[in-house]
Length: 574
Image 1: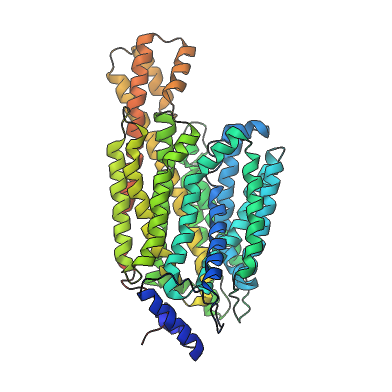
Image 2: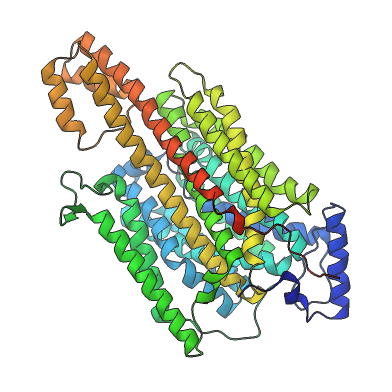
């Protein structure tokens, strides 16, 4: 289904061809022309307008990603304020991810139906209403309505539209830089989220974060007037049955992954739901995959009947597209796993505050942003495959270096070099993958690609966090029990009780939390010291195990890089 990049420009008028060729020439000189190219328009907007359009789309991406991390350091405060438990707030965060995953593919098709710019604007409006309701929420149900549902639906309209609007507003050779900056904005938001949430909660109120989001949304809506729409001449129809199947399939699969920490991956934890002795997580994931398979079969049947599918199944036979989507999956799996593991090390193992933890993540944001923006600018003709492979190698090197750096006696500065490498790898991938996926299909399918792409990144992000968390807890439990068993200072009765209780799951505790619990239990000084030592060692073993699984994911990603093209897409060819 993939056509050569130049075939999509075969019907350009002579004037448009000249504009496109001029843009290509400036790209080869390495200059930042920024000239967006609105489809079927005879002129290109000014460079200032291009930067404004890019800023608007990047701001939208920033907001969508911010909510996935901004309240992680303030969960207890939010729970007290709205009269619920920590579990309730964690459920709200989970539900936001779930709603996005469910509606991402239908949201991409909605953009093709009503116009990408209109979908972007409507999505921003819905998201802004959700942020306002969240800022004023007096209880958990209202919080769920605003944060989890409305913001999730808004994000499902906005994110696919951003992919299509970049494709429609920028000439092909300018897209790697544009996609790189937009992707970097999302990753930087995840890195800065804890810092922003910590500052707001410490000095003001967590509600100010969502009130600030409303103001940002208003600014985006004002600037969105400069964005050129990319509406198609055709009037597509939405396959409602297919939309329901895809939403249920992705939603059930992601829900199962998100509950894995509480229920267990295969063997159910005590009091966790199960069927035939197997954790319900497995059955939910299988049910989700079955529904996705039924969805793809239905879409293939619609194509055979010459009816409009929600997504064209032949897209999944496109080597370049599936290669780009696979790399997106691994990028977000590793990215969200790192953003889960590193803050735990800094805040729990080293005892840093939320503000200091957020500040320590800044090196990652700096190299990520630099690589995403500067690689397309200074190396416009570089091979995407080579950049992606080097990016994956940087991720792998950073993860291994971080494993080696973790130490109970090390300072927080020890993570700086590994985070610089990981940020460099993420930025390198971000600079190429968006352009790789969109250039693989005709431009009128860019919204569909946006929906599938963001669904894949949601799956990767969910799996990355869940895998890192479950592997870390499993390794922590095993290491702690081994250390306790080998310590003669710990009485046999305490060892037996610890074995029984921890087999059902351990908790990632700081030394201060564990010491308080031991004092309340009335343990002796010798047992307390031995337990603290065992916990400190087990904590590091758990973190190293989580990083090892992320490094393994980076190695697996290398096997799929051959699907990435070796040359940059171009608007025209001689």
